[in-house]
Image (cartoon, rainbow, N blue to C red; front, side, top):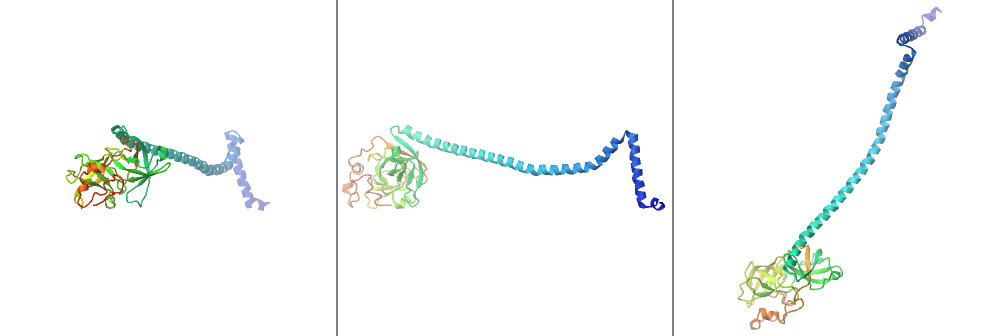
Length: 318
């Protein structure tokens, strides 16, 4: 028995009894055992509650990542749709702005030429291998377009329809040697023909030939259509004279013409479907332009009985 009272176990029991006694005295002093119990339970449950709260917060944060990602994805899709709509509106705006700019120029032409019937068209294709810059437009027979209809811009004559389908047409430009146009110098009133040549076409130029030897045509003069063939409307600007020189045979002059229309890069055109005097040609238009052609010693004008037919395409220099 004596050994028990001196053992470690007894000492531990005594320590526990002292602690319990102290708690009981504190409880009696502060109002009861409930506080002691609550304190003990609080001491035990508080760490557990903290652990639970931490786990709950971690789980909430984990799942909130997916919830937020879904919301962000929906917001991104909404913003992408808004950007698409804005881009479409921007394209429509640019298209309308471009059309207004084009139609303003066409309206000016219409005011100057009320008798002309136009069909606006856009260039939709070019033949990269064509040295004379022919192109295809988005209008055809369904729009009243016919072969040999003239094609112009607000700046001047571009060419003539050489081929036509239901919804398209091919345009040969005034740089093409197969194209001959009756013209005159707007200052001197001297008449001549304009055609293309291989050499000049590379520079974006064409040739005015059969100018009278006594012509006063000079660099900078405007050249316009005469309308004598009935194939082109009259008084359409063709270009400006860049050079004047005598033909190799010496019986007439020629001039190098710089077209006023941007033939190489034209994007919008007007097709002239009808005009005053269409199809009505002079009986012998060259005779009116070159009355002394038969007197040419070297017969340089022997082919002059054909006007704007393509058979005189660029004869002589350059």
